[in-house]
Length: 353
Image 1 (tube, one colour):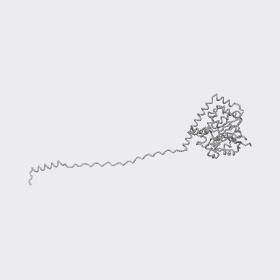
Image 2 (tube, helix red, strand yellow; image 1 turned 60 degrees about the horizontal axis):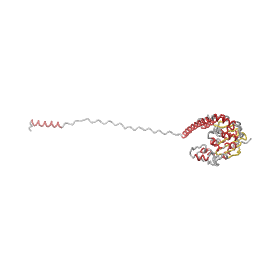
Image 3 (cartoon, helix red, strand yellow; image 1 turned 90 degrees about the vertical axis):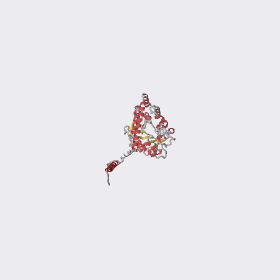
Image 4 (cartoon, one colour; image 1 turned 180 degrees about the vertical axis):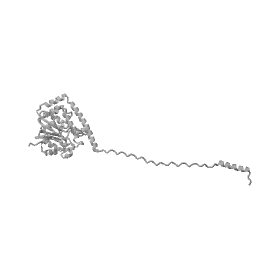
């Protein structure tokens, strides 16, 4: 076949045009592989909740008791300061006259003391319930007596006995050590007695104090006393396991023929003394048996301090009643209407040799 040059040119031109319109594919580099994934971090460990501190009930109770003791000590000191300030020159002169006066009998001297302004505020309000003249005359108090008061407390009887005995007799009271351990409530009681005596040297200067060890009470007054008094004390002796010890000390302190006078909150006749003592009460027959087993003889008893209104079944024991009113304002009118506790008044005698 004869291909002309013109034809060949036409063919070549078409081929070149085709190549220009369809260029060869351009090769591209493959995408880089993704970076390796870091291993997932483990969740951070949560701190364990702190365990609540262990509370020792005994330790918490001890802390509460110490806090209450500190509060009570502060209140006692403030009250003692106020009472000491009350003894101005006029009251001091009255006390001197009271102590120096001559009275025909202990009863007359007691009645004079009852009227004196030296008595702590509020104490006279208790006279109607406690019958101090009748009680002490029943026990045979004389102005010449040597008297031992077991447990002066806040001094209710001490402030009456001191002026009666200051001139011709002798008063000895027991108290706990005012310099004892700070954490002991007995130390507070010892300080209270000390502050009471210090407020009036004219009134209390001749009073002897026997410091008592609660766990081993000793009087050291063998055969010198005419009268030993235990006024609302015996339940505490039994509660502390020292009833027999105190009674034995009273027996040793008395002269032959001397009197051991007990005034005590009286439990129901069938009461268990181990339980009733916790409430401040003791059964009368039990007290008589225990005291007589120590060598005393019951001479007689009196109902001068009896109170038939006392039902002896209160939430806070005998301290529910006046003057303590341990429940505060709760049912206060009811307990005020009952009055102070029903009390036995027992006169024991140490037999003559």
